[in-house]
Image (cartoon, rainbow, N blue to C red; front, side):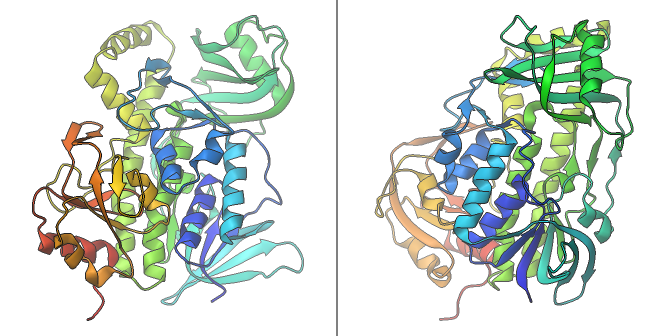
Length: 498
């Protein structure tokens, strides 16, 4: 084998996955068709759950230093309120995708990830032992790579998905949106937020002094996706909607998107897996796409590493599809709703007014907020504890190892059995998994932990936390060691003999 895992695509999803695999000791090569990063701004932010993911690996500060926290969010342009009690990171971080990719690539280099650019996947062959990846590369570079697994993180037009024969069903586009980073000397306002017009809507948002991100959305105008996108098209679209181009000039980047929504029928085909836009595309309402891709990688990374290193059976990889496919379905569902809610016309105007009036209620606001931020996700899990399957709150701790909060325990990317009971029960139960699971004895600083969609939950006596920060098992009072051993076996393989 040339490597354990080949990842196609050096975007945020592929780089995050590479970091997770290397952190777990897996050899990985990232192949990217582009010769260098484009520098295009693209996506513009990270939601709470993604910020927690970075915090759980101890690298959040480098992103906070580049971006800017914004205490507002929206659902189809209708403002959402955030709740500071739900997370240590309740607000979105405005940070351009170009900066995210740069920071993740720096992290990948620190961990020893190999990134091979000017290398495009053009063929794959699977067998019982691995995958042969054929590459179209620059002269002199190897033309094939042999790996145990291949993960396609190569975007909405994924070559890996097509070569693996994975269906990509969904709904067609009903509108066209243009986006560009330009200068607008004729705009007298600080920004324009979703101004609705007869044919659609437009926005102009300042990212840096002197230039704006302009987005125009026109309904019932669908352009062939292979047609080149030009600055003149953006200018003409803004004139149709706003009646002026505000003196637009000096484009840094221009692109196009629509509300087509598709999802891979399965996220795994043998030794080939999909993550990010390769697995799902949708209208980018609420900025969920990049976030979902990073979270796909966070879910898949530790599972694939466990299988590659022989610590867990290959069947563990099936849980990746089982857990993340429903999340993708839900995002496609809510972005279709947001696209419909943005349509021009008197009927939609009335619907938006009614919908907006409901959003003042805490339950409605909380439901939409949890859906967009991904803080409310609950994966299927054994047991009926309220925390089982949910992402663990970053509760304050007084731990024997000096940790002061839960997320500090996850920096190494290893599972954690957190014993808050003061008894020896959990420690004895985890002995057979000491090579894979860290036992931490601590005292919770709070009697109750905040959990989105539930309010507050009494701090448990013990809980088993997966490397992706989701709770695999939890108990109040005297822990059920049989249930704990079952969870340990399910997620981290059989106990060591002796």
